[in-house]
Amino acid sequence: MARTTYYGGVLKFRTQADPTTPGEQGRMPQIGFGTGGIFDSRVILNALQVGYRHIDTALLYGNQKQIGEAIRNFSRDDGSEYGGVARVSRKDLFVTTKLGFYPTQMALPLPPVIRDFVNNTSVKGYSRENAKGFEKIGIEQSLSESGLSYFDLCLVHTPVTSSLTFWTSEYPHEFTNWKHDEPIKPISWIQWAVSHLARVLSNHLTFPDNGYRSRKRAWKNLEALQKEGKCRYIGVSNYEVPLLQELMEYAEVLPAVNQLEIHPLRQMKEVRKFCEDNGIAVVGYGTGVVINHPVIKELGNKYNKSPAQIVLRWAIQSGIGVIPKTTRESRMRSNLESFKFKLDVPDMKILSDLDEGRAFYWETSNLHAREKQPQPQNDEL
Image 1 (cartoon, rainbow, N blue to C red):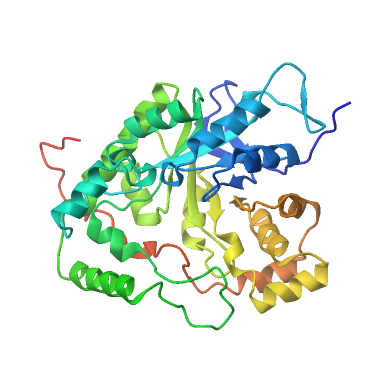
Image 2 (cartoon, rainbow, N blue to C red):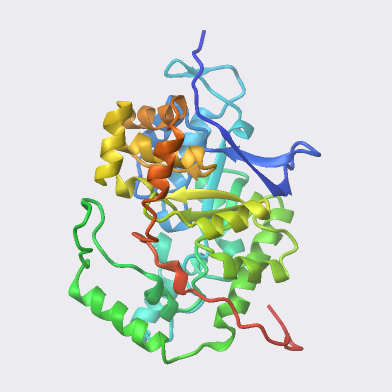
């Protein structure tokens, strides 16, 4: 008899109903498997075998083919097994993808050669299909490459809508081996210089409507994809409160999910409270970036758990979804075991007090919504 696996809790969102069960709220597994940088379908298949039922990807990652291959191998309704584990139906798996990463046109501060490369190249994550306004083409391309008929959740990857804000929102540093109290190290002086110049320019230049129409067009594309059945749920990523409020002005469907960088050093409490009040589930990425923090290590020793398990458990008890990434089976299992213990209230308070708003991936607080003003007559998408 095939053994069963434990794969954690469930996140619910009030903004979108379950399309397969009338009257039920939308839901998703609270823990998922992150796949950025993973191009081996066997790793993804191993995660499914271990017990993950949520796979997180993005057009930027360029691994839709491998993800589709793993899911097709594992999702069968014939009662067969894979590695001693019963295969499951496709409807029992949850696949998230993200698109619209790049501005619609990366032309403003770029020379023609670079602009043409960014807008026309066939490199997966840098293709036009991953730009604002091309979400429908991007999803159709991803579905074709993966061999899937739909995605469970489609997110706007970032609210960035111009090449200048792309640079000013980036937070360049080296974080993989970061240790507490060490200074952030720029990736290179060239990237630091370009980023710094972009920040200076952004303080002196204004763009029409701060990218409002571009963001609106991106969301309307996702709403259309949902109506076509290509995305069961739709949501956003890296949206802070002002941008969520802006979206609510034009959205027919409110986001199911907001995916953000969240860990004890960047807890995003204001955004999480806003999402909670409006029925939007929150999923955190980047949880593992702070596992070298001494307080987290100390708590790991207290509970006889790894630092990664402590951070994941903090997020889980805080009602946040998590998408840890690893290629090692032992760590895949260890991450799932974060559901099998509980942090005491005083220790949750200790972790909560670590918050300093420190971003390790993107500094999104400087991405602004459109200023309140009368709506123009020709508000075309």
